Length: 278
Image 1: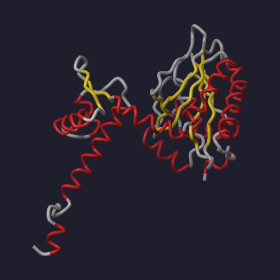
Image 2 (image 1 turned 120 degrees about the vertical axis):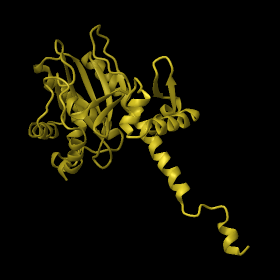
Image 3 (image 1 turned 135 degrees about the horizontal axis):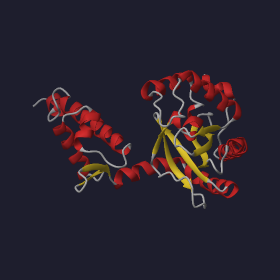
Image 4 (image 1 turned 45 degrees about the vertical axis):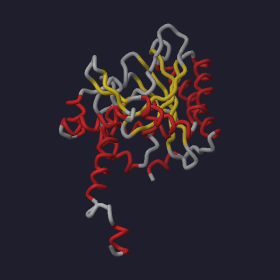
């Protein structure tokens, strides 16, 4: 056998095998994303439909992920869910940036100052994902399950993050998600949303007036990285009985100043209002 033949022996002749493995990897990651967005789990038929794959292919990929500890099947409910290994990998992102750990004392301070629940969330595509919380001591309080999601346009944290997106990125988010109503107060007109986002940039905080849940008000502000890019957002939320309209400005300024403290502690910078449009 020649030197060239010896070196190439055992390799795929056309690269199809490598491409097939890559396609399976992409499909598997796609399934993980969809399961991560549905904490209650999804049936096989639902996953296959969302991923636009044949049920047999979907089942084969899920079994492969299950064998490695990334997903699990709830036989009683008949649904698939993410498993502990996926959770650990997700946590590695949080630990690497550690803005969550840095923010926790500030969330507790906000709860002590306001008597209300304080949250921290990040943007994931067109949704906000909640990663940390300091619960209100009140009997009637707002509680958000960690890992849960809310549309950017229909939540205080979401709008605080959305306000600082470059215009082209904002367009992508709107094209992907649209402005579906969550409540009758949800902003569903693009022109009105853009006006609100401009106000958020000017005042430094966002208000959610029963836009995500009837009876609840929320104020939120963005934490920025060293480039002025949105890194996360913090919020204070509670029932309208304790957070009426006339209290939103006071709480908004408090949350904004707290977010700016966290930004400075992380080595970030608060951008000028016009920078988001660049």
